[in-house]
Amino acid sequence: MSSPFLVAANTATNRVYVTNYNANDVAVIDGATNTVVATVPVGTSPGGIAVDTSKNLVYVANQLSATISVINGETNTVARTFTLPSSASPGNVAVDPSANHLFVADGFNKVVYVLNTSTGALLATITGGKVPFKGPVDPAVFQPGKTVLISDNQLNAVEQISESNFAVSAGYKGGSSPAGVAVNQTTHVVYVAEEGNNTVIAYAP
Image 1 (cartoon, one colour):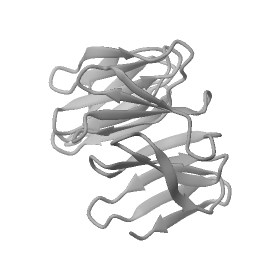
Image 2 (cartoon, rainbow, N blue to C red):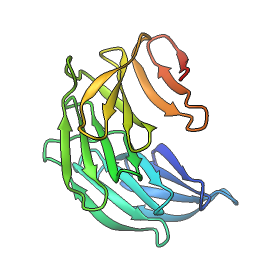
Image 3 (cartoon, rainbow, N blue to C red):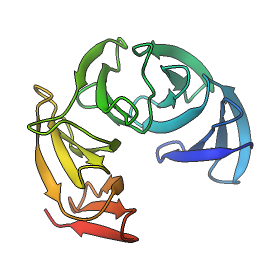
């Protein structure tokens, strides 16, 4: 691997996917042997990555191509490429299979894109709620089919996006420069990495 950046796993197939930012590809690792079994060429500067375990598809955000590569996990090939606005700089991504939505954070342009995972159509370009986004970083599915969370490291907040109308509402305030977000779908606890104070905050449901 070269310049490994972000990682996602398919728990159904025991495959692990690693974006190689400078090599413009994704390494596929067999979780049983911890060996690289395939290397998939994608767009320029792949970063954000998310897996739809139900369809065995992998979504890769190509930061400098303004595209999303969709990898077929069975064949380890790019099945489709979704095109974002030419000025887009896609970062972290989250997929909600129950709603056929892909959320793409673009901190450079201070927006979150929503794509239809079936067609690749751009459904919305979200600029924020009552207060515009200043630095959206990491989307995470909160309530499948209903809500998605997005951290904003400039607003010091994790906000909530409705999947029905893509409206943004208040989520979790506090902390300092929130970055990574993860949701335990069993306990519904939300974990947020805070870059500004070197902590991880756990928000109870």
